[in-house]
Image (cartoon, rainbow, N blue to C red):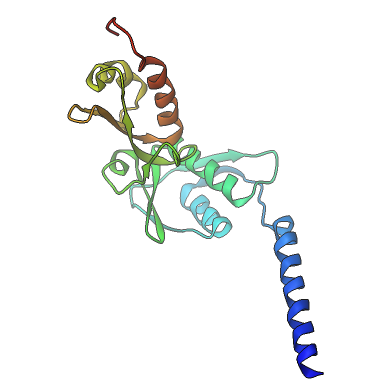
Length: 192
């Protein structure tokens, strides 16, 4: 009789665990960000609490931020808003192992920003580096066309040996550049 009770307890424990997994998203933490002239380091602390991420903040990261949100956001939405706030103020978040470094934009592209791909392009204002294969035109021909669309702190270069473009910038902007490149990179007898 005792083995049946253990089996029953295990079954009940498994059922309870499934219920918790199913119901847990409904209880996930949400936050409404409303800050006026708050110190950026206070915002970083709030984002660390909400997202569970650890941050290392460059001493040059200073300033006041204002954020107004009309609805509660989950931790992923808060992080995306945070990345946008950093962009507006000239800073970037660079993942580095178990921590995220907050740096001025000009230093971020020289740091170990993640590599993006067609299948994992990154999202929003996340800083990424992406290698874009060009098929039908010379990658070097695209550089003068695309350079005005890459901000000063970004990077755009052609690598002629494999006919690729290398871009370091915000994921959203790189995705826009890829869309433009795909429209230009077609079979044609005429020059761009």
